[in-house]
Image (cartoon, rainbow, N blue to C red):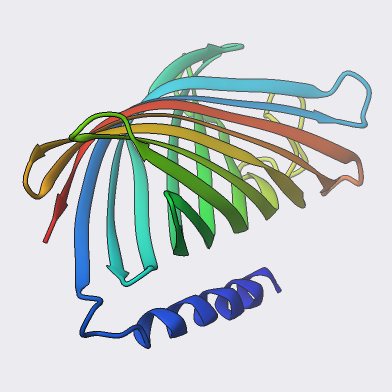
Length: 254
């Protein structure tokens, strides 16, 4: 159902984009690349007494994306992939934690620095535990997937600099996958579960023109999502997910 909502909203936006006056609205394309230091934290708890776990990591991430705009309409596709797992002690194991995110966005620039947008995102944290004596002890996935809506506001802060603030709300499906012990036996991590997640994303980005068609970007972003649902053994569960990251990168316009 959520993907149907996305198709309907995005279809309306892209329809307007495609019908923009091509004479006064040339097509613009940009490529974006960032590196990021990302802090990831998942706090899981279920209704079984004293059952819960916290998984957190500091991971290095590369972000690549492209944006196409025509007139006041724009669309973008972004992918984030950690290129360095964080190694964290957990009981008698070492945890290797990574993260991937994909987002498709379509929006409209209203004017005076204000834009509105909608989109669809998929995010996944992978957690693998390796015992000191060898062999896997954990193999978990925390997944969020669904649509989001939001707005951004930007304004010049110098002749070549722009400061932008963005705020988005996401309403997503949530899933926890325990790929070794689905029922979450003691010491094996949370039980597999499904539910709903929602939350906010707030970002601040400073861009500076270093060449006629190239921008230097520095940003800070916080995503916070809360999920609730039922796991495979019938207990209700909650999952609080926090992502905080600093980004540094370039945008090149064609």
